[in-house]
Image (tube, rainbow, N blue to C red):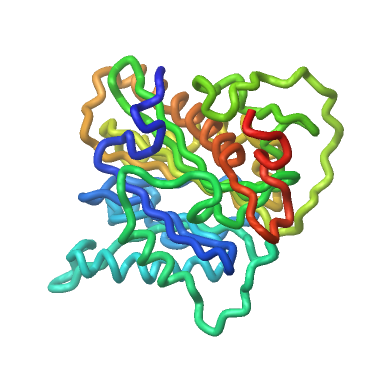
Length: 330
């Protein structure tokens, strides 16, 4: 496998990503969309998820494709981002046809960033406007680190952020990942600069430091409370997948989360992975292709998580140091 030309989820042809954030709020929204509806599924492994429209992603549900997926800060308030995204899509005449009306299908998930030092004393939820702005800005190129849904994210010991990565399989199939990292666990090993995801790093995409020497791991103690930590992600491929096959890709991708964040999938996290298929490339081997797609999804997600933390930028008022302010640029 090798990274795609951008090393972003948008190396999957047809996908676009947009970010919108507010520095005073210390929060934001990230939207993934495409020119045409796409197959989507979800798998949830965290104990405290916050979601919108995820039930309809089950393989047995009527609606088979969606128009956009969003990741947002703001805890439950962030679910309002879907309203702004729907408004933008409806203006583009996008959505599931119901008689003369089109209903945009916009699943999403949120992370908790209400206690990160930002100004949360709003009179009207800012998230519909942030969702609409993120949709309007969607393009193949987008910012990572302190951006979008990852703007105010934190981990156990360092700032979190927004990350992405991609891989091209020997078959030519492309797989990518997009993630907002706001974990209870840590992306780095102990007090070192080394990332847990180092064995899967491509080049120097998150510093090229290599794995840390093995260290004894004590039983961890939570440093966040119930509902305050969540890593939310999207993995995508251009391969033709059914909803059931996309769900299996999401299941496999969770392995990448566990490789990159220690611990993961705790009762205090809302960890989940959406899976997307744009369906522009027909798979040739019904056994090998899904097998490799799942592996690539996990690998890309691990790399994307490390990139999110590595690229986070220091900002005035931060409650945690960024990786770069603590360890330098590597």
